[in-house]
Length: 110
Image (cartoon, rainbow, N blue to C red; front, side, top):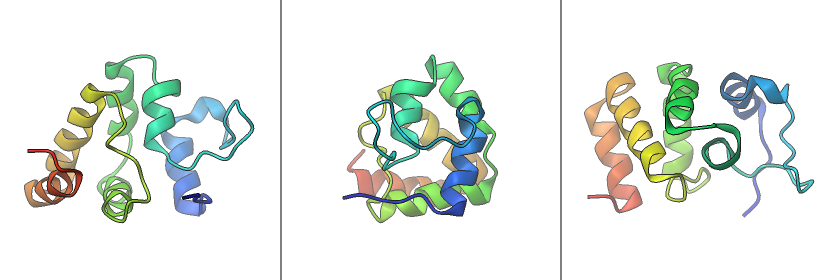
């Protein structure tokens, strides 16, 4: 499955990875198919760095990523385990406990 970033994707990616200056091409020369996976595995230097970057997102931007994840268009399952915890905590804080439960259920996380 290949996804081309739309304006919202680019806006979010620029917010969480400003050092890339809007570049959505991986070192392998491919367009990133996801926002969170390269952030978790390549861009963020630590779990704390990942959290700080995701905390920059407002509720609407975070919910957009949740919506994509629920449509299997954003990858959360393959993030570093501590980054998955961060996503769940921030979804609960910024959106709602129900939205977090929906996401956990979709991902098969108990």
